[in-house]
Length: 323
Image 1 (cartoon, rainbow, N blue to C red):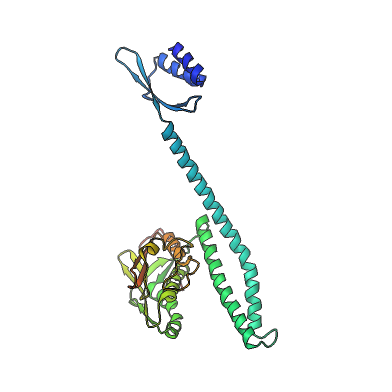
Image 2 (image 1 turned 45 degrees about the horizontal axis):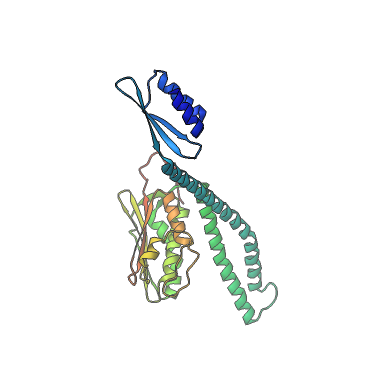
């Protein structure tokens, strides 16, 4: 056995490994079936197994596992690279969003002063330009806010502020300011919720943001003469909040990626947004331990339904009564 080890060592290196193998075989101690893996000097990786034979000898088996080992190593390297890239992306989004906020506030502030006539009277064309600046800066502010929220969620820094709320009152508060907007667009807007639907435990601010993003998406793609419905119901411990529209619907390939950030696709010739609204909806619902589903087909409208746990019977959750 010693001669075999010496010959193997001259050819393949790893003297310490061969000595350890010889000691294991000749020591008479209890022998393990799987001894481990060793790497030869030619980079071949061998899995070594030992098995006692009836005559007291030991059968040593060497299996070439080089390909398997390399594949596992490549997969580990790829996973580590993806994690590093995701951290880098999240850090960039977080820092970039904060850097955008201050100059954006300055642009909005000065544009509002100009629109109010603080810098003197403007002609019609100048007022149009200022109105466009305010519209664009407001849209950019919304995107920046969404980016910050997503960055906080990715970093694990966002915490829900759970409170006991009346589901109907929450939905009614969100929908009330949008009724005039719907009327101006000739869209039939309906709140489908029973005033006695009951109480739930959730983060009211984040759920209002979920509902607002769903409604904003519906208004963006619903044509004049169409209809939008905001609904809410409780089935056992399942709280369901949905927004349904009669817009052009989603193609299967668009529906499959609807919750991916920056994955917005235009529909019916309309310009797509930044692709953050539904991604943020999904992340906020997941923070509540819930999930989101989409029912949609081309030319048949879209329904997005958020499922949230009711939690009112959970005694271990510290909640406050929302005013």
